[in-house]
Length: 527
Image (cartoon, rainbow, N blue to C red; front, side):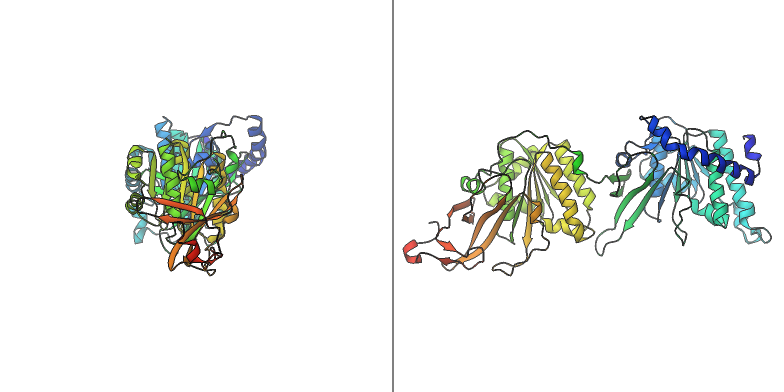
């Protein structure tokens, strides 16, 4: 052990404070003068993306969060990544046993061996009733012993990566904030050069513990957000990273077999609008294409809105099927119905999705709104566009997507970023929004996102000649002109028929049209 370890704690801490006051003010200048800062991978690709390439090497970092948020799993990933790269690693556990940590690592298939774990916990003699202290406070005996044991092992191994789990043990033994802070400062000063240290804290203190935030180089906060129904959402935030640009805000993550999977928050501005101009996407139905002005332009989003059962999903699937027939890839994210039901319904209307699904041209993904987080959903969309070359995306429906959100007020923000990203990538986006009600002006929309869509197709039921019929019209198209008429829509069997403009009727969208020509003189609609 280095001779400096024999210096009394008060003197060593004072020396550490002096050194820290000089070096911390120069951290930013040093990193600015060296544009290529050495990075230390965290073991999670998503977290490395959030951090701008990984943790700047050779610094102290605090990972804080309540029990169950995945701090230990992330730390094990950090250690396993170091072992994979051939680095010296050390995981110091102050609460859990070595066997418990190795079991967690084995469950996540992380290659962490027993030699990498140092167990610094009370001995069996200390836990017996006759081994409890009566004269000296544990802070005067146990704390110094544990810190000295950690320092000795660090000095012997000189690791490149060091994890200390968990600081709550040090905080309780220290008894007061000043002693606690000085112990952490001594650890920081004694750490080997170029050693990246990860401190874990379960935030068990009753008060906001900000003592460490000013000491460490970066702070990562992991939290769990409970929902009234479905599984809890987990999200991560980098609240501090000295001298480095990082992706701010909350990022959803999951704890899966293999470790923490983080979904970086989508920033649409990072994706430039560089797609080449192509021919508009046609539906394969001549009358429908005429209604929408010759087809849907690439890099635009279309909202299909109307009551349940009026044909919104059918029209959207017609665009996806035609895209697959042109040799393009398409994906449908379905929240409400199963994939089997969707394919069966499409087949009954003359669309054979099964052959396109088998060939991989069309991807049908069923999502449970109670189980999926917004970040996970956005990651699925990005994976389809960037790794599977998808050119058409269907979200069926926004009602289900809304249920996956932590709050209704966040839907517009998430949707704005997602649509801007898809538009910049030249993707044709189709969104379905079901209204409450069936006929008349009493129908309500659960949330107004119409201003986000480039195009809006409205579908309605209306009564005529003793029958319930369906109508379709285009209310908005930002990228060009479109037909302003209302056409009748008829579904099946084995066909989707869009009739000529209903020019002899008015009040169709209200559900109670009036004929401008006597019915006996006009004859049946579209016959």
